[in-house]
Amino acid sequence: MYIVTLLADPKSANLERVAVESLRDAWAGGDVRWLNPGVAAEFPIEAIPANRWAVWEGMQALGLDLVVQPEAGRRKQMLLADMDSTMIQQECIDELADVAGVGERVKEITARAMNGELDFEGALTERVGLLRGLPESVITQVIEERITFMPGGHDLLRTMKANGAYCALVSGGFTAFTGFVAETLGFDENRANILMIEDGKLTGVPSRPILGREAKVQALIEISERLGLAHDAVMAVGDGANDLGMLNLAGAGVALHAKPSVAAQCDIRINHGDLSALLYIQGYAVEEFA
Image 1 (cartoon, rainbow, N blue to C red):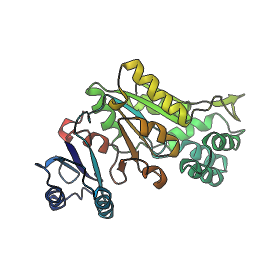
Image 2 (spheres, one colour):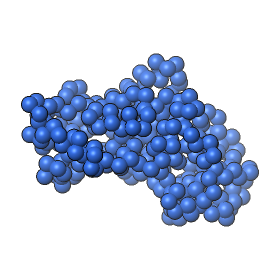
Image 3 (tube, rainbow, N blue to C red):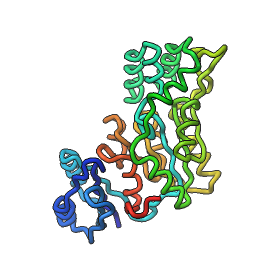
């Protein structure tokens, strides 16, 4: 059996009963279960319909997300999450660069790297180089004045942890930020690159080895093995090209508000919902949120 989940942005809550029931009828599905009125609903089907992606496109035009996945094992025991533009709404290096006065140049490099147009390691090295000489205090300034959390993140962490899941934050960004995000949201561990500092200023040289796509894959392999979990028990979420390795390896790889070239390579694409969508697709109703 498979489960079809329809999702709306919780702010708009525009998921209507007629849309859910019309699709259920067209796909000969079972009883509809509302996970959150106006926001999320699901129903079972026996096979993946041939017109799945055509229907997905139609739902996107209505401001809705559509996910089809196997019913068995969809409630995961581990969450592996990217940070920038995933658990938080910013790209930390872009915010540092903005303070340094080189924001537009760095944002351009970031966008191309996340879209897979540039080598991640080379792009990170170039961007960090543009931050040379910034005072160390700018890190605290960015955290306090510019970082905002992606909606639904607190619900996601609290609920998965309350149900026994292990949560790891793995970023191509920097430990100066992942430490703050992990502590605030309740991640069990975090991995990222280190911003090198000498005499109270950023050196403009990244630490080696640089944590990128392969390091995220390795994190999934190492942590799941340490916990005795199969890869199928892992949900991974990210938005950039350097996340694709872990998204494809995990049992559920979620492209969250991802670059089009990234989303096209993932079966679970959340473009309208927030991080609470990751709970709904596991079958959690809003009443079960911790």
